[in-house]
Length: 514
Image (tube, rainbow, N blue to C red):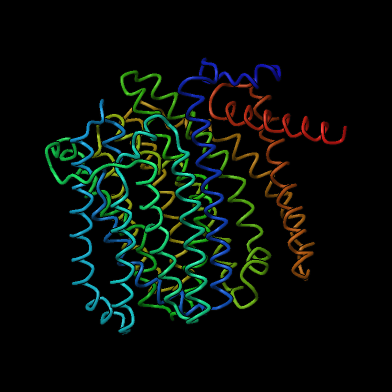
């Protein structure tokens, strides 16, 4: 296959236009947006870690655990139903707005009532007011303009990009001001609440609509509501189980280190996987009536996501110690071993996570419940046992075990939903995994050179080492892809985009030199 064929990006027999092109461009825009937002989050994190202590982060992590569990339990599939709907009418939008307001009211009352008992359970009265304040964040997230769905259905994510970047930047300024004024854990809580507040305001600037409280089209949401709510309950418990359980077995400072490592390990998920997942539902919904096309689209998208996430996870895991030393400072070095072990677990969930979008697209939301329920039944008892016997190390090991079980469950469910054989999935991911292993060997050779460097040389060394690793990964993946006969699918799409980007950079460089 020639370069012209690659740049043309024939994916699954179709030129890279129409749905495929919109999906790729939408995913790229969302990824850039999320990278920008995460960069702002990282700046916020660096500022707060230099002004606050691990104990402060551990305290907020305990309060956030209850808030995030309740938020997930009361999460409504409003956006998913609107995206999947044949037509978005004004009554449907008003119903979505009403459901969001009711959800916020119920969520706020539940958190207010449970704040004090939860604080007593962990023996710290400061947790109760923290929970009540942090409850504002999920309430505000549910009050964003539902009319934003018009942009999502067209795969126009510019409003999301501007809203997220501006909201995060303003939240950084507010949190930094609170941190400088108080040197208190309230700065972390302020950052969590300020961002959704600004984002909600910006959503109405992009998609204005008059408030209308009605439930005329509630039946559109009812079928998805029951299954999705149950799935969200178990998903929330799965997500926060280790923090919730570890808080009973380890000191606050150790919990703060673990929470920081967990948040850093989730950066590839938040910056790459989650924004790409937002394109899955609209893309798969348009293929729901063609089983073969749906299967190929899902496999292509999943392979593309895996190939993007793999090198970032490898770099984060193998370069954890110099990254933590540079970004957070010496007193946070306890984060590094946790981060090295937690980061690779994300790869096990790159097949598991997109299944919720697929289940909604094919009209079988009950499949999401099966996924999260199996994970819950495995995770909770294993985490309790491991935390009791081995503390922090045991809880980290359980994540890997649960990830492997979740992967197996996802492969079985994929075959039941769309007839996708597990072997096809594993074969499609074999080449990105082999390229990631080659990158890992390169980083292992280069890593010792980063020891003992000062901040500026360390930063330059990390950029050089990480950049070389990414370039080596890209070359290895391209070589393996060519060796396999240049198959269509996710790798073809990713290599085509990378080839186009490199060619444009070279042309601009040549023009600048001329």
